[in-house]
Length: 140
Image (tube, rainbow, N blue to C red; front, side, top):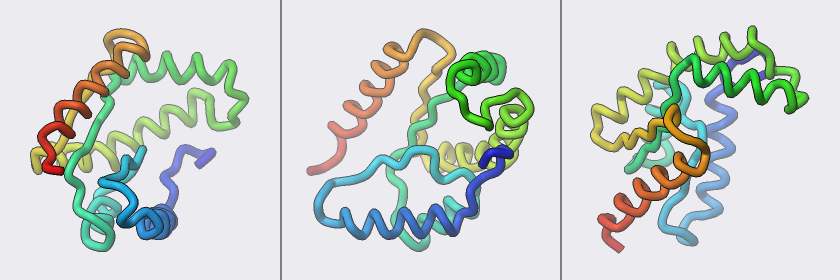
């Protein structure tokens, strides 16, 4: 992770499977942040664990992302918050994760929030609206 690489899918899958089994029957759904990050993870998740019904993608342009990450890097103290690792992460994201985003767009379950405009509060409001609109249509 410190080099900007993706955690192996089998590690994440095992953790998700264990936790989702533990939660089974106790809730109507779960929100998984930052997963899947590659097509094989998406395919394995839907084949082994569950079918995705809703995907939220908070989009951010590369220049804005770099600016925000570099700003975070000045205060975070994380070894992986440097420009070289960030560029590698963004490159990995474009190659590995964007096909997943397009896959969910093609399935008609992708909801996109533009985080370039506004501050965190505005992004939160947009996100909340998407959840409220989507969840209000879901049968109870």
